[in-house]
Length: 274
Image 1: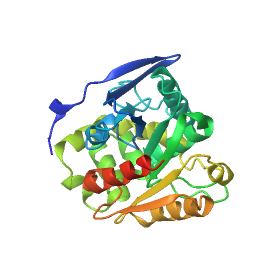
Image 2: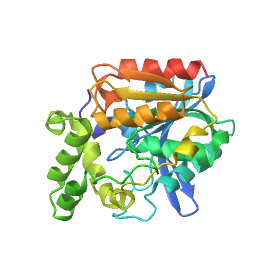
Image 3: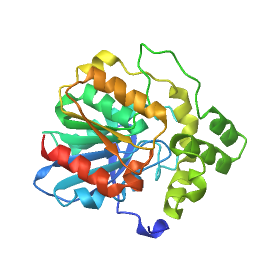
């Protein structure tokens, strides 16, 4: 894998009523647009193995969520919130004339943003792919915030320790030490977003709203992901019995990086069938 900041994709800036949104795009195929929504500690660079693969057939839109790199404003930020992210992305799709909707793909925290977008603006979502969502539902009790220690380390000035705790928790022990340089650069650039994210810890999803989704849904999990992500997918499958389910072999939470060939094929085959 390329190891540094030298291969960053070109980016665009969309002015918003109260700020701006950075994004990259590629392709212009005959297929409907694909919107890629990254998760915690990431930005649009996270999709480096998806953007070119999907661009052969589709316009691919990959934003950096409000507050993420290259946004240099300090955290915590009030605007770093699930519903605000969803509103920003609806604004982006309309600004790009995607009024007929996009195939929306969300990973981890980005899956909750994707779900919020589908609930806020269902006309903009042709389909929804949720990869390893981690949210709880309103009928479930709150759980301890798994990254509370990481937030405390950030506040104490131990950025590297905070990152290691977070990444190893979501993807498996010793993951951070083994990651390639470009990924580490990206995560370091977004480390302080946890100071904002913790304000929304345990933000729930209404199961009735999830069950009422009108668009086709694909539920994707990493075969080696921590068990909590599988429980979220199981519950969504109960709420959405018509949803398709896929398992990415040889991959944990970062499935689109660990096994991009299978992840890409899975998403493209689903999208083609919508």
